[in-house]
Amino acid sequence: MVARRRIGFADAYLVSIPDPEALELRRSADTARRRRNFGLHARLGEPLREWYAALEAVLPSSVRWSFPDEGISARPDATASRYDLVSYDAVIRRLAADRA
Image 1: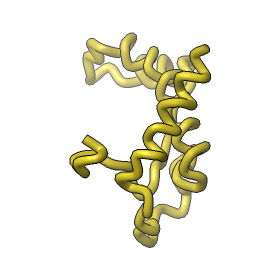
Image 2: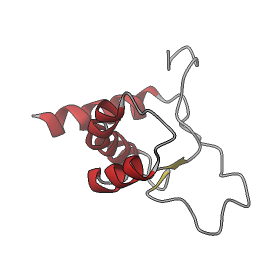
Image 3: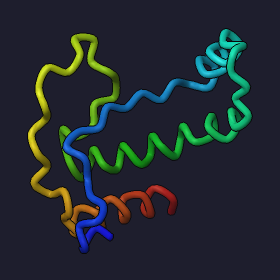
Image 4: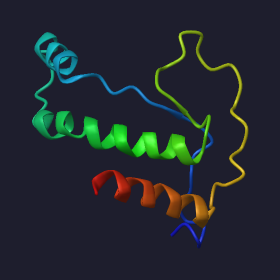
């Protein structure tokens, strides 16, 4: 899919992955929603951290680990490696190495 330019890397990633305690507090405070899949989504936090850390290692400055207080005033620079298979393979290798 990357080689065929069907999917690729984003120009920037704004990532906020609350810890499990913060998620539970949010869940408890919001009684209007059922949150049937809360447990599954809560367990995805660590794999998502690993994924974005691998992206950050391969594509430096592409990941910001919080939402900017000042907002976003300009579009980020376009990613030159949007469809780069070398970068994609490097992300996958990094994830595999972390599992070994």
